[in-house]
Image 1 (cartoon, rainbow, N blue to C red):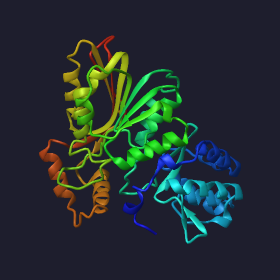
Image 2: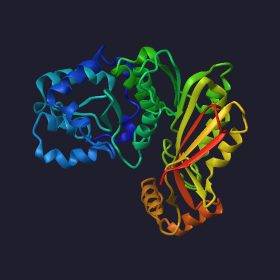
Image 3: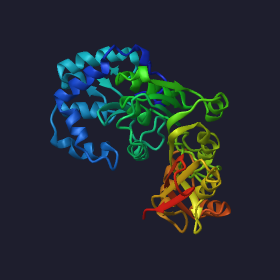
Image 4: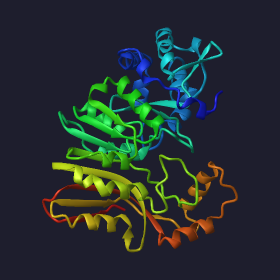
Length: 368
Protein backbone atom coordinates (compact mmCIF):
# COMPACT_ATOMS: atom_id res chain seq x y z
CA UNK A 1 0.00 0.00 0.00
CA UNK A 2 1.22 3.47 -0.82
CA UNK A 3 2.16 5.91 1.92
CA UNK A 4 -0.43 8.54 2.85
CA UNK A 5 1.90 11.29 1.61
CA UNK A 6 1.74 9.74 -1.88
CA UNK A 7 -2.06 9.66 -1.92
CA UNK A 8 -3.45 12.79 -0.31
CA UNK A 9 -2.61 15.04 -3.24
CA UNK A 10 -4.05 12.77 -5.93
CA UNK A 11 -7.71 13.83 -5.85
CA UNK A 12 -9.22 15.32 -9.01
CA UNK A 13 -12.73 16.56 -8.07
CA UNK A 14 -13.26 17.94 -11.57
CA UNK A 15 -13.19 14.36 -12.91
CA UNK A 16 -16.11 13.15 -10.82
CA UNK A 17 -19.00 12.06 -13.06
CA UNK A 18 -22.06 14.30 -13.07
CA UNK A 19 -24.56 13.40 -10.31
CA UNK A 20 -22.08 10.88 -8.89
CA UNK A 21 -22.91 11.82 -5.31
CA UNK A 22 -26.62 11.27 -5.84
CA UNK A 23 -26.01 7.87 -7.44
CA UNK A 24 -23.54 6.84 -4.73
CA UNK A 25 -26.01 7.82 -2.02
CA UNK A 26 -28.72 5.72 -3.69
CA UNK A 27 -26.51 2.64 -4.00
CA UNK A 28 -25.33 2.93 -0.39
CA UNK A 29 -28.97 3.18 0.70
CA UNK A 30 -29.67 -0.13 -1.07
CA UNK A 31 -26.95 -1.88 0.95
CA UNK A 32 -28.11 -0.40 4.27
CA UNK A 33 -24.90 1.62 4.65
CA UNK A 34 -26.61 5.01 5.08
CA UNK A 35 -29.12 3.65 7.59
CA UNK A 36 -26.35 1.97 9.58
CA UNK A 37 -24.12 5.07 9.81
CA UNK A 38 -26.96 7.45 10.67
CA UNK A 39 -28.04 5.13 13.50
CA UNK A 40 -24.70 5.48 15.29
CA UNK A 41 -24.28 7.85 18.22
CA UNK A 42 -21.64 10.32 16.98
CA UNK A 43 -20.03 11.09 20.35
CA UNK A 44 -16.94 9.37 19.07
CA UNK A 45 -15.65 8.44 15.64
CA UNK A 46 -18.01 5.97 13.92
CA UNK A 47 -15.06 3.70 13.13
CA UNK A 48 -15.04 2.58 16.78
CA UNK A 49 -18.66 1.45 16.58
CA UNK A 50 -18.16 -0.14 13.16
CA UNK A 51 -15.23 -2.26 14.36
CA UNK A 52 -17.39 -3.50 17.24
CA UNK A 53 -20.31 -4.56 15.02
CA UNK A 54 -18.36 -5.78 12.00
CA UNK A 55 -18.15 -9.48 12.90
CA UNK A 56 -21.95 -9.61 13.22
CA UNK A 57 -22.58 -8.18 9.73
CA UNK A 58 -22.70 -9.77 6.29
CA UNK A 59 -21.75 -8.59 2.81
CA UNK A 60 -22.43 -6.33 1.02
CA UNK A 61 -22.87 -4.03 4.07
CA UNK A 62 -19.77 -5.43 5.79
CA UNK A 63 -17.72 -4.92 2.62
CA UNK A 64 -19.03 -1.35 2.26
CA UNK A 65 -18.03 -0.46 5.81
CA UNK A 66 -14.56 -1.94 5.43
CA UNK A 67 -14.01 -0.09 2.15
CA UNK A 68 -15.59 3.29 2.86
CA UNK A 69 -14.90 3.69 6.60
CA UNK A 70 -11.99 1.50 7.69
CA UNK A 71 -9.51 2.01 4.86
CA UNK A 72 -9.29 -1.65 3.89
CA UNK A 73 -8.69 -3.22 0.51
CA UNK A 74 -11.95 -4.97 -0.39
CA UNK A 75 -12.35 -7.61 -3.08
CA UNK A 76 -14.72 -6.45 -5.80
CA UNK A 77 -16.57 -9.78 -5.70
CA UNK A 78 -17.88 -8.89 -2.23
CA UNK A 79 -19.62 -5.73 -3.43
CA UNK A 80 -23.08 -5.17 -4.84
CA UNK A 81 -22.59 -5.51 -8.65
CA UNK A 82 -24.22 -2.11 -9.26
CA UNK A 83 -21.91 -0.46 -6.73
CA UNK A 84 -18.88 -2.23 -8.20
CA UNK A 85 -19.71 -0.87 -11.65
CA UNK A 86 -20.28 2.64 -10.27
CA UNK A 87 -17.01 2.74 -8.32
CA UNK A 88 -15.04 2.20 -11.50
CA UNK A 89 -16.43 5.53 -12.76
CA UNK A 90 -14.87 7.26 -9.71
CA UNK A 91 -11.35 6.02 -10.40
CA UNK A 92 -10.30 8.99 -12.59
CA UNK A 93 -11.03 11.32 -9.65
CA UNK A 94 -8.55 9.43 -7.43
CA UNK A 95 -11.12 8.90 -4.69
CA UNK A 96 -11.39 5.17 -5.42
CA UNK A 97 -8.43 3.07 -6.58
CA UNK A 98 -8.09 -0.50 -7.77
CA UNK A 99 -5.48 -2.64 -6.02
CA UNK A 100 -4.15 -5.76 -7.80
CA UNK A 101 -6.98 -5.49 -10.36
CA UNK A 102 -9.43 -7.34 -8.09
CA UNK A 103 -9.96 -5.07 -5.10
CA UNK A 104 -10.88 -1.46 -4.34
CA UNK A 105 -9.53 0.90 -1.69
CA UNK A 106 -10.40 4.40 -0.52
CA UNK A 107 -7.50 4.74 1.93
CA UNK A 108 -6.69 7.21 3.56
CA UNK A 109 -10.21 8.62 3.30
CA UNK A 110 -13.49 7.69 4.94
CA UNK A 111 -17.13 8.46 4.23
CA UNK A 112 -19.17 10.12 6.97
CA UNK A 113 -22.89 10.81 6.75
CA UNK A 114 -23.76 14.20 8.25
CA UNK A 115 -27.31 15.55 8.04
CA UNK A 116 -27.86 13.87 4.69
CA UNK A 117 -24.48 14.82 3.20
CA UNK A 118 -21.98 12.26 1.96
CA UNK A 119 -18.84 13.72 3.48
CA UNK A 120 -15.24 12.67 2.80
CA UNK A 121 -12.42 13.26 5.30
CA UNK A 122 -9.49 11.34 6.75
CA UNK A 123 -9.85 8.07 8.59
CA UNK A 124 -9.07 8.99 12.23
CA UNK A 125 -5.35 8.80 12.92
CA UNK A 126 -2.79 10.67 14.97
CA UNK A 127 -1.48 12.56 11.93
CA UNK A 128 -4.70 13.56 10.18
CA UNK A 129 -4.23 15.96 7.27
CA UNK A 130 -7.90 16.36 6.29
CA UNK A 131 -9.42 16.71 9.73
CA UNK A 132 -12.98 15.98 10.79
CA UNK A 133 -13.85 15.53 14.46
CA UNK A 134 -16.27 16.15 17.25
CA UNK A 135 -15.38 19.85 17.36
CA UNK A 136 -16.33 20.08 13.67
CA UNK A 137 -19.78 18.73 14.48
CA UNK A 138 -20.05 20.83 17.64
CA UNK A 139 -19.54 24.04 15.67
CA UNK A 140 -21.92 23.10 12.85
CA UNK A 141 -24.67 22.25 15.33
CA UNK A 142 -24.26 25.55 17.15
CA UNK A 143 -24.43 27.65 14.00
CA UNK A 144 -28.12 26.95 13.35
CA UNK A 145 -27.79 26.59 9.60
CA UNK A 146 -31.17 24.95 9.00
CA UNK A 147 -32.56 27.80 6.86
CA UNK A 148 -30.22 30.34 5.25
CA UNK A 149 -31.55 31.23 1.77
CA UNK A 150 -29.37 33.88 0.14
CA UNK A 151 -27.21 34.41 3.24
CA UNK A 152 -23.53 35.32 2.74
CA UNK A 153 -21.64 32.77 4.81
CA UNK A 154 -17.90 32.79 5.55
CA UNK A 155 -16.16 29.64 6.80
CA UNK A 156 -12.67 30.37 8.15
CA UNK A 157 -10.21 27.48 8.47
CA UNK A 158 -12.80 25.51 6.54
CA UNK A 159 -10.90 22.22 6.26
CA UNK A 160 -12.88 19.62 4.28
CA UNK A 161 -15.88 21.89 4.60
CA UNK A 162 -18.59 20.57 6.89
CA UNK A 163 -19.84 23.94 8.24
CA UNK A 164 -19.86 25.59 4.83
CA UNK A 165 -21.44 22.61 3.10
CA UNK A 166 -24.30 22.44 5.59
CA UNK A 167 -24.82 26.18 5.13
CA UNK A 168 -24.83 25.81 1.34
CA UNK A 169 -27.34 22.97 1.67
CA UNK A 170 -29.54 25.40 3.65
CA UNK A 171 -29.38 27.95 0.81
CA UNK A 172 -26.42 30.15 1.79
CA UNK A 173 -23.72 31.40 -0.56
CA UNK A 174 -20.55 30.13 1.06
CA UNK A 175 -16.93 31.26 0.89
CA UNK A 176 -14.43 28.95 2.56
CA UNK A 177 -10.88 29.98 3.49
CA UNK A 178 -8.35 27.15 3.87
CA UNK A 179 -4.55 27.27 3.57
CA UNK A 180 -4.05 23.50 3.29
CA UNK A 181 -4.31 22.64 -0.45
CA UNK A 182 -5.20 19.03 0.30
CA UNK A 183 -8.06 19.97 2.62
CA UNK A 184 -9.37 22.61 0.20
CA UNK A 185 -9.31 20.03 -2.60
CA UNK A 186 -11.31 17.60 -0.47
CA UNK A 187 -13.83 20.33 0.35
CA UNK A 188 -14.31 20.93 -3.38
CA UNK A 189 -14.80 17.20 -3.84
CA UNK A 190 -17.41 17.21 -1.06
CA UNK A 191 -19.21 20.16 -2.62
CA UNK A 192 -19.22 18.35 -5.97
CA UNK A 193 -20.48 15.07 -4.52
CA UNK A 194 -23.36 16.87 -2.80
CA UNK A 195 -24.26 19.04 -5.81
CA UNK A 196 -23.41 22.27 -3.94
CA UNK A 197 -20.65 23.72 -6.14
CA UNK A 198 -22.89 26.51 -7.42
CA UNK A 199 -23.13 27.95 -3.89
CA UNK A 200 -19.68 27.05 -2.59
CA UNK A 201 -16.35 28.74 -3.38
CA UNK A 202 -12.90 28.27 -1.88
CA UNK A 203 -10.10 30.74 -1.15
CA UNK A 204 -6.97 28.59 -0.89
CA UNK A 205 -4.81 31.01 1.05
CA UNK A 206 -3.76 32.12 4.51
CA UNK A 207 -6.05 34.13 6.76
CA UNK A 208 -3.65 37.05 6.45
CA UNK A 209 -3.82 37.00 2.65
CA UNK A 210 -7.60 36.73 2.73
CA UNK A 211 -8.08 39.57 5.21
CA UNK A 212 -5.68 41.87 3.35
CA UNK A 213 -7.64 41.62 0.09
CA UNK A 214 -11.02 42.47 1.64
CA UNK A 215 -12.43 45.97 1.37
CA UNK A 216 -16.12 46.40 2.08
CA UNK A 217 -17.32 42.79 2.05
CA UNK A 218 -19.71 41.84 4.85
CA UNK A 219 -21.14 38.48 5.85
CA UNK A 220 -24.32 37.62 7.73
CA UNK A 221 -22.74 34.49 9.18
CA UNK A 222 -19.07 33.84 9.96
CA UNK A 223 -17.81 30.62 11.53
CA UNK A 224 -14.31 29.47 12.42
CA UNK A 225 -12.87 26.20 13.66
CA UNK A 226 -9.17 27.14 13.79
CA UNK A 227 -6.28 24.88 14.81
CA UNK A 228 -6.92 24.72 18.54
CA UNK A 229 -4.83 22.01 20.17
CA UNK A 230 -2.66 23.72 22.80
CA UNK A 231 0.81 22.58 21.75
CA UNK A 232 4.03 24.29 22.92
CA UNK A 233 5.82 25.88 19.97
CA UNK A 234 8.87 23.71 20.65
CA UNK A 235 7.04 20.69 19.20
CA UNK A 236 6.05 19.70 15.67
CA UNK A 237 2.38 18.87 15.24
CA UNK A 238 -0.07 18.56 12.37
CA UNK A 239 -1.27 21.76 10.69
CA UNK A 240 -5.01 21.23 11.34
CA UNK A 241 -4.37 20.99 15.07
CA UNK A 242 -1.42 23.16 16.17
CA UNK A 243 -2.82 26.13 18.06
CA UNK A 244 0.32 27.24 19.90
CA UNK A 245 0.97 26.88 23.61
CA UNK A 246 -2.26 28.66 24.58
CA UNK A 247 -4.35 27.21 21.74
CA UNK A 248 -5.06 30.75 20.47
CA UNK A 249 -2.34 31.27 17.87
CA UNK A 250 -4.76 31.28 14.91
CA UNK A 251 -7.78 32.49 16.89
CA UNK A 252 -5.95 35.75 17.66
CA UNK A 253 -5.50 36.37 13.94
CA UNK A 254 -9.19 35.74 13.29
CA UNK A 255 -10.30 38.12 16.04
CA UNK A 256 -8.17 40.87 14.50
CA UNK A 257 -10.25 41.06 11.31
CA UNK A 258 -13.42 38.96 11.56
CA UNK A 259 -15.46 41.43 13.68
CA UNK A 260 -15.09 44.03 10.91
CA UNK A 261 -16.73 41.63 8.44
CA UNK A 262 -19.94 41.08 10.39
CA UNK A 263 -22.96 42.51 8.55
CA UNK A 264 -25.88 44.18 10.30
CA UNK A 265 -27.67 41.58 12.43
CA UNK A 266 -24.86 39.14 11.61
CA UNK A 267 -22.90 36.80 13.87
CA UNK A 268 -19.40 35.36 14.14
CA UNK A 269 -19.02 32.03 15.95
CA UNK A 270 -15.68 30.47 16.92
CA UNK A 271 -14.97 27.21 18.67
CA UNK A 272 -11.66 26.71 20.42
CA UNK A 273 -9.58 25.30 23.22
CA UNK A 274 -7.46 27.79 25.08
CA UNK A 275 -5.04 27.93 27.94
CA UNK A 276 -5.69 29.72 31.18
CA UNK A 277 -5.34 29.54 34.92
CA UNK A 278 -7.37 30.11 38.08
CA UNK A 279 -8.40 33.54 36.74
CA UNK A 280 -10.09 32.00 33.70
CA UNK A 281 -9.32 31.20 30.04
CA UNK A 282 -6.87 33.44 28.17
CA UNK A 283 -9.41 34.18 25.45
CA UNK A 284 -11.38 36.20 27.98
CA UNK A 285 -8.82 39.01 27.77
CA UNK A 286 -9.07 39.10 23.96
CA UNK A 287 -12.86 39.19 23.96
CA UNK A 288 -12.90 41.81 26.70
CA UNK A 289 -10.98 44.14 24.37
CA UNK A 290 -13.49 43.49 21.58
CA UNK A 291 -16.41 44.25 23.86
CA UNK A 292 -15.25 47.88 24.07
CA UNK A 293 -16.87 48.30 20.64
CA UNK A 294 -20.38 49.60 21.45
CA UNK A 295 -21.79 47.92 18.35
CA UNK A 296 -20.60 44.45 19.32
CA UNK A 297 -21.88 41.98 21.87
CA UNK A 298 -19.57 39.13 22.85
CA UNK A 299 -20.71 35.86 24.41
CA UNK A 300 -18.14 33.40 25.74
CA UNK A 301 -19.25 29.90 26.73
CA UNK A 302 -16.65 28.03 28.79
CA UNK A 303 -17.68 24.43 28.22
CA UNK A 304 -15.36 22.77 30.75
CA UNK A 305 -11.93 22.96 32.38
CA UNK A 306 -9.06 20.52 31.88
CA UNK A 307 -6.05 20.30 34.18
CA UNK A 308 -2.86 20.77 32.16
CA UNK A 309 -0.39 19.93 34.93
CA UNK A 310 0.29 17.38 37.67
CA UNK A 311 0.46 14.24 35.52
CA UNK A 312 -2.97 15.06 34.11
CA UNK A 313 -4.84 13.10 31.47
CA UNK A 314 -4.05 15.98 29.11
CA UNK A 315 -0.29 15.55 29.58
CA UNK A 316 -0.62 11.80 29.05
CA UNK A 317 -2.60 12.34 25.83
CA UNK A 318 -0.21 15.03 24.58
CA UNK A 319 2.87 12.88 25.18
CA UNK A 320 1.32 9.98 23.25
CA UNK A 321 0.23 12.26 20.41
CA UNK A 322 3.60 14.00 20.07
CA UNK A 323 5.37 10.64 19.88
CA UNK A 324 3.59 10.08 16.54
CA UNK A 325 5.46 13.11 15.19
CA UNK A 326 8.88 11.74 16.00
CA UNK A 327 9.35 13.25 19.46
CA UNK A 328 11.07 10.61 21.59
CA UNK A 329 11.78 10.28 25.31
CA UNK A 330 9.37 13.06 26.21
CA UNK A 331 9.42 14.30 29.78
CA UNK A 332 5.91 15.20 30.96
CA UNK A 333 7.36 17.26 33.78
CA UNK A 334 9.37 19.35 31.29
CA UNK A 335 6.24 19.92 29.17
CA UNK A 336 4.34 21.01 32.28
CA UNK A 337 7.12 23.49 33.06
CA UNK A 338 6.74 25.00 29.55
CA UNK A 339 3.05 25.52 30.23
CA UNK A 340 3.80 27.13 33.58
CA UNK A 341 6.27 29.51 31.93
CA UNK A 342 3.34 30.76 29.85
CA UNK A 343 1.08 31.03 32.91
CA UNK A 344 -1.00 28.08 31.76
CA UNK A 345 -2.31 25.53 34.23
CA UNK A 346 -5.70 24.70 32.69
CA UNK A 347 -7.32 24.33 29.29
CA UNK A 348 -10.91 25.12 28.46
CA UNK A 349 -13.00 24.17 25.41
CA UNK A 350 -14.82 27.39 24.54
CA UNK A 351 -17.44 28.79 22.20
CA UNK A 352 -17.27 32.49 21.32
CA UNK A 353 -20.14 34.36 19.65
CA UNK A 354 -19.89 37.93 18.38
CA UNK A 355 -22.90 39.85 17.09
CA UNK A 356 -24.67 43.19 17.06
CA UNK A 357 -24.89 44.63 20.58
CA UNK A 358 -28.35 44.31 22.09
CA UNK A 359 -27.48 44.17 25.77
CA UNK A 360 -24.33 43.67 27.87
CA UNK A 361 -21.09 44.04 25.96
CA UNK A 362 -19.56 40.81 27.33
CA UNK A 363 -21.37 37.79 28.72
CA UNK A 364 -19.54 34.76 30.11
CA UNK A 365 -21.19 31.43 30.92
CA UNK A 366 -19.59 28.33 32.42
CA UNK A 367 -20.79 24.78 31.73
CA UNK A 368 -19.13 22.22 33.97
